[in-house]
Image (cartoon, rainbow, N blue to C red):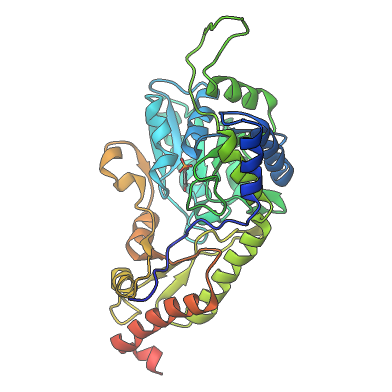
Length: 385
Ligand SMILES: *Cc1c(COP(=O)(O)O)cnc(C)c1O
């Protein structure tokens, strides 16, 4: 059996262990500590966000953003439909109502047109949405200009779910710093990892300080334990943050490697009939966390994304369908949705290819070779020509 090629495995740089050793030798084996402070400084320095708080997951960061904005029972929150469920679950934690919005074709991210249509209709129904959760999928920047214009025009705050987008920029400005708050994830499969963790970023000090307070059990200033608000236990541990500090040192290298994966795939597969790629919008620079393709069976000689996925699996190569949109998920059935089938089609035709930053050229070749062989077997006409 050939060695396994994973979709997006963790990739240590080497320095992580020295930060963990520091934690051990000073006995900071605790939530909070000098690595957490250092990691928050690193994150603010890298992204340009004035304030940041390190948490134990990206999901917790989205939840804290909603709580900080005062989202409560019955409030409506607009949310990208084409995403991972963790973007929308915190809306449910608050007993609020997610209103899902479809993608636009190029970037695969939230369509400004559909967003505005949704807002207008919700307003007509007599209810103003309280927030927009905007996802930058697979690291690819959304149409920031239009989205922020809409946010300002209707006065609805934006929470940027940049969980997959650390190291992605729009007009040289880091994602997660355009909206009122931004969220990063350091889960094991993301571009860098703390083995599990997240962060909430903002230029608004009040938001971040409130999230910092609530995520550490909302303890009032008193010698005894006193609470006047409901708290959460969401802070990052000093050990995890040590991994994060080491990973920050190699982040730029990881981005270069992931972008090189994308270029390799694009050069090798672009000419195959029916294959499409996720595009960067003008002035956008994606970290290319995952390289994703679409396969249109009407042009590929009948080949579907499932044919390719199974062929890769037979070669011990992990690939994965694109996210199944939230408006198609059983758990979210019955919530409002504004769209025109873009994300439905992407889900049907789309496949995430192995995109680890440690992939060798030989491994990339194994992936593209397997895909090209599928097309040869299908005897696709334009390919043979
Ligand atoms: C990973 C991810 C999250 C959640 O982050 P966790 O750290 O795993 O909780 C949220 N949104 C998107 C789009 C993600 O990919």
